[in-house]
Length: 493
Image (tube, rainbow, N blue to C red):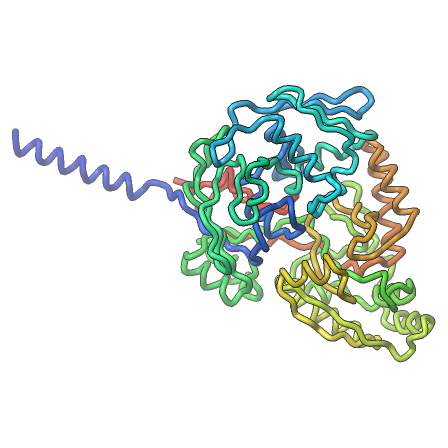
């Protein structure tokens, strides 16, 4: 009997060891191109922040799903008054922040009032401009009254800029973020990686991953060996360069070419000479060969656009023919504007390959019509400070990845420095319109106005070149919002 027991015991140990070996992984390293300037999504326009914290660490009243739909989040339901001005949100109960403090209606009131305050540092403060009052009716109920009906209000509340934070920890969120999400902050090695761990006290469905690391890998030279060696298991937006075809043929990996909300622009300082002259901007538009720019943008993928709108949106209008590629016409327009011999300007390029490599192509094309550009590479923090904040630039190449954000062209003192009362009127009408068919027509009108004004060089819709281990499930193919949502990601058994 002793011998039989020993054999059975040994078999049981072997079985247990085999089961452990076959257990699915619970860790993940995700490669990201840009390091965020900090980790507070309510205090910066940097997409790199939301790419780490949205839905993972921080949550809003609503959230944007993988198909661009508005979903409940910290608000489990809501009612809208007949006049479309009063939203009554029923909040989830039993929710706590990562520091253990309770979430309730007062946190919602604090967050929304903070975002819309006169001294607010929220980069998307305009999202909250329609709010008149926020009332904490009881711990689980919030009533938001708008100044006028706003058809996009629930969608706006799903942006990363609208996440709910606690008054006790809000000021420290840049370095030690505290949210209500399914992951908690576990550390930040500056210049290297941000680490998250599973929130065991999460109010909703538990995530499968025990820990996740967002590792900063800015270019293909570093990204490819990291992927092939298994050091990094997923790149939601991979800087693959010419190696993408090789990766696609490797059965160890899944490659998905998806869509983003990233309108890639030759952003132009409309308030600065000579770009304040529409003929100069039209000349630039005629000098741009979008297909060449796409071919040289680092991935070779992208959909040409002629205005600031995603081709995936049902209201999209193809306006690429507004100013077709015509270098001779570009030269003629420059002569009419008084620049027959061309002029010199600067082109500030942030780190992403679509900007650095695509910007080289842009500079070459403008040189052909007499516009000599001095290329100035800048780091992400420099771009935010010099270009976005201080408007210290002539031209830059950047992707605007915020969802459905054509309204930025109506903002006073935005970094484009564009001011068209007719466009603002369309946006004001859109804000007060809930009827879907009417909203589509207004969006189409808005696209045409900024296309004809050649506000920017409208280049292409940024593709989402997703690459990850073939055993990973739940990664997003498209990016309807600037996020790398890990809440449904798991390793297959």
